[in-house]
Image (cartoon, rainbow over all chains, first blue to last red; front, side, top):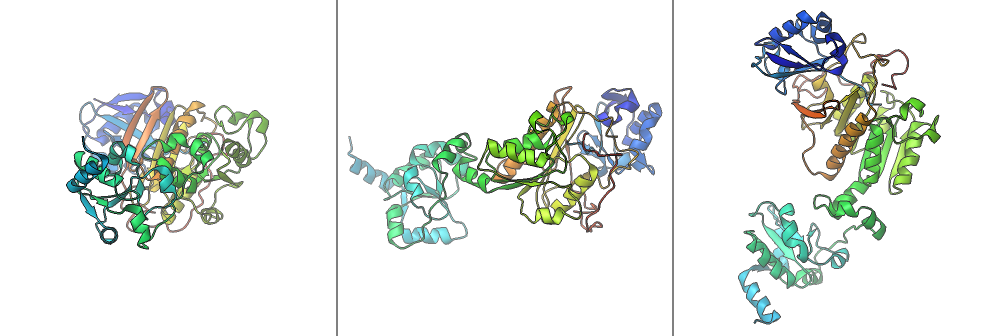
Length: 90
Length: 391
């Protein structure tokens, strides 16, 4: 079991919570578990069976694109951060 | 009990000295020593040997480690006539410095020999007082404050992030601040945009910012640009010359535009963004780390971009994130510390929690990668209907 940190832009899709527990030994399994329970997340996270280019996924602070992408392994108890692009400033 | 003369003679026999010709040769060598002027401030202001740093004899032991952390670093000390520097050299040897020499004859002999001198720039009395709390910090000091006064920072947006960033940069004495904003002060801005005020409702934000900042610090020149950054004007605005850019924009088109411009012009970009209770900050420094497109190669499709209407932000949040941006900008201007390069700082105001993720340069980045595919400015369409300036 890992903890997925949900960014404020996506909290509406998961009932407003900041963190959601999810199961999976890889990022793919973990996101599948998450998206099975919250299907509205899918278009926000995945595009053509890859992590969408406008969102980053970090496992223990490292961008999975610089690791093994969706196949990056996720240790039990890891913190996974989802980070969509955020433009606001003003 | 020895007399002063006897003590001087004794200490002189225990340290190494060079004459002015040897000193000149040492300073011309590749592995030149760090040249330290140990005279008093008044003497320093009347002329110095080029390249010297100033640490008065009385502060030498407490400040030298900052200037020369490595005890093996060669040091060349001078005073006016070569006597105080003898004692200074002895003190530094006692502190463990291994390669210390004193300039025999000192500055007087150097000047008499016709070797080059220069007048150091100094702060006048009023500036010395205004910036005294900076001057007291070894990492800033008088040199650093002069550097800030010579620095030029461009701010995108005079809003939530731009307000605290610009206020602190102006207070710090950053000599020139450019403010790009095409919006007017609206009542709904004042919950967080502390650079403006109720009396300024309806004014251009860039003009309101200029008044506030120049009232705060008349040493600062504020250049307002009452326009929205576009592919048409970005080159003109950057041609005015900026050392650092602070991105407090509220929309994706501007963020991509300024990122690409910063990469192509090799200007560090201090990024900040906010949403409700959460903020992010990082520094995109061309050549030293990733750029915004390494992080997000393309903006999200319009239907997935968070709608402006459902935005909202806790008023103090941009105060925190914008202050972090000012901190990064000041460090970049001063050349001190570890800028937030390759690290994205995340702040959660509800949990009062900072976290950090690692950002890496993407060799396939379309702008700063090894084979760039984007080589000219792209004007992306705005994602929100209406003006997206009230996120």
